[in-house]
Length: 508
Image (cartoon, rainbow, N blue to C red):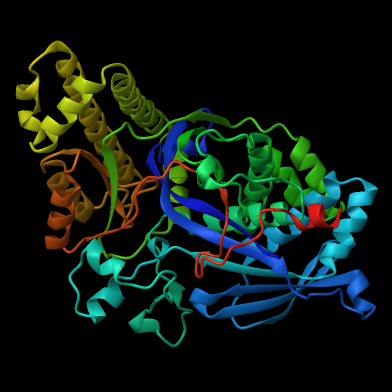
């Protein structure tokens, strides 16, 4: 009996840096790239040895990295110890296990706690798998002599073994790092593990992705969100904005962060207070984040491109921007105010376009397809009647707002001494914005040398893919998918049918 849950990766379209401070919002899109967690009993029967009553075994397998780790989980204090590990530890999964089990103990009555204890004595067998989109396979494609196109990416087997970055100058001393594409793999992985465990243990009942958008499991999603946010923050050693976990749980939306105090108290309390008590406080805490439904308007496609210049370190870039804010408060406040206005303007135009699509579908569709085959300087000529004119005006205003956002992000980067939109990205994005049917292009999130994104109209995405390929940029297979965390009916590698019912419910 296995439970499989999956959670999506993200693209932060607007709100880079500002999202760290309340009440600044960010528009975050969830993607078709998903992380999967498979949870099942490690042993068919409970262990006969006396050790098993105080401890249980947890096995974590990551096939893509050819890694396996074995842990002992203390059933009283819920501390976790590594028994054997082929490689470095995975703190995200370790905290996800501890906090999910603690959440079960914190929310169950005595009868259910007894069942939970029996279930845990079977051990926990956890497998984690990430879609290929989370990782860079440029080197593999080049090694095979294939062109830099999505079609080449599609020839790779699903959940392909992960290539490592190697630093030639320092090969003997540095640990190989997994080359990533910046889609928030740690947040998606943590969320998938928490959701699978909480479902397996009978704490929540997660819906399948087929139920989106009419989900009835919002209270269960809130529980997953609180536990995943806490585990992710503690594993990182800092309380970030949390937009990546939020989109992994809820899908695409407009996000305003929670007050950091709701989690930061945990970092202190966990050292002296039993974990279930800490988790009870977390679950009852004042989670004041704000989430409003948002996704791209119809007939628009999100594209991501990998320039192949290696990822950027978000924490060091954020640190540099914070330092600049302290050293020049007046200028930084003014830049943030203008950036906030530009972000709001883009959000307003995209919401307006969604409204036009609902209320004036024919005019909206006609405008989108007319503009999809032209560069934006020719769009106004397509405004043959008032409704179509209104749609085209909103498209041009959205494009203008994006140019304003990019200008101010560059300004902030120059002032803080960090490459938020490096010159190589500026040239690439300018070329992209000038293509037929391109509405938006930018660097997502904190910027740097990670992936770039574009939003295209109608069927024009192939223009971008071809141009990117000629500029040595690999267009990824990933698209927007507004669905958040969900229960899967099968192991994604084998499509072998799994259980949708938690083990606790079976015991009952």
